[in-house]
Length: 371
Length: 124
Image 1: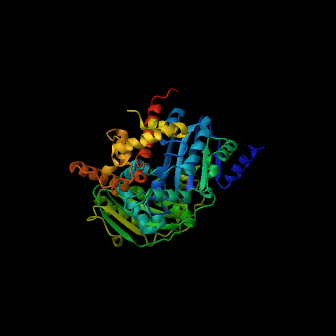
Image 2: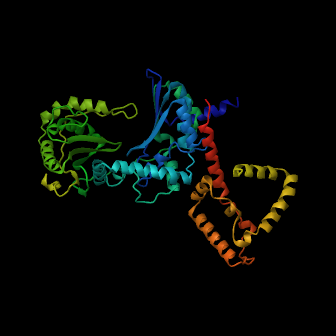
Image 3: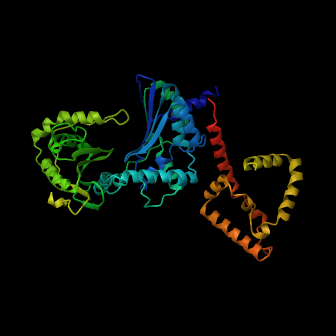
């Protein structure tokens, strides 16, 4: 009787955690934990990136090295990443090892040690390397700037820790306590039995997650801003239109009509311009529709003008013709962990005022007013 | 050299036995008094050999303030050695100040090293 009481309290403790499981053929299980409202849009800038780098390091019950080696012996891989919305932990392993990885992920969220020496020796160098690798691409730097112009705070925060503000290990630990909460956490398992997963989650360290959730950061949209960066390497010009979550359907259709980067083979106006494509970045509370031209500076300078012209000349028939292509792009982007559930519509999506970032050889690249 | 982990283990064993600690404690106190490192302004942890990867790792993980204080004590000790003088009694390190600021870091580094050796030689 004594053993029953804790078991029951554990299963009620994990009820606020969203759990989704589906069976899959083969012997592979993919188990992901998504911590919503924990991405770079919340908290001090960069702190969520540093927290994501703390995942799978020393916990109270197991050292990072032991977990890595055990994982190698069991035949599993694990990774962690930060997005603007969430911190994502991914594991892939053989079906019989489900309880081991559920426990491992649970103790990452509830029992990470946050040792100061790990912060200096592992977390900061890893974060710095990721930041530098990402910023080696001018396109990434431009997209970061476009987000900053369009949203300022929140979604406009830098995705990775850039070292501008000093973040201490205590800041990271406190942020972890703020965001690793039951209502923020969602568990997705592909190739696992739903009942088993529920049982294992109830018995694992997930039961020690604090209850509650973190409020979503407020979103403001800003338009008509421009930024130019002098940089070596490929040039790029980026038009960005911040979009409300309710307008995703409209702009997905516009993207398909002018030429989405997801449908590279399709005949479209942007397909005729070298290095041009469009994409709708979709986040929890807002999105950013981006039309980009990258390549040699002279090509970009003429290409971005043509792209803007193509964008303005999209007619209502073009939009209605592109609805099925838009549905396809939505289906292509929808995953088990991040399902997209908005309806595409052929309603008139205006570009109007837009944000503009030029990067590379800015002597040649046009200004926003020239477009 | 025996690892510090085994030394700490032995010390804990002695302290857990009242009779044994009654014998060893006065000996240890006498050793510290004759060693005289406190009159040179040093703490016991300053004397632990740092010329090993584990020692280096432990020192690199010390908080900034501890590193500064450690270097300051070294300079004091060097000055005492050069001038052939001991610190006056009120400047000498008091027994309650002689804390183990470094040993926890060495123990952690040793634990990591032992675990690594164990996992490197694991048989499945």
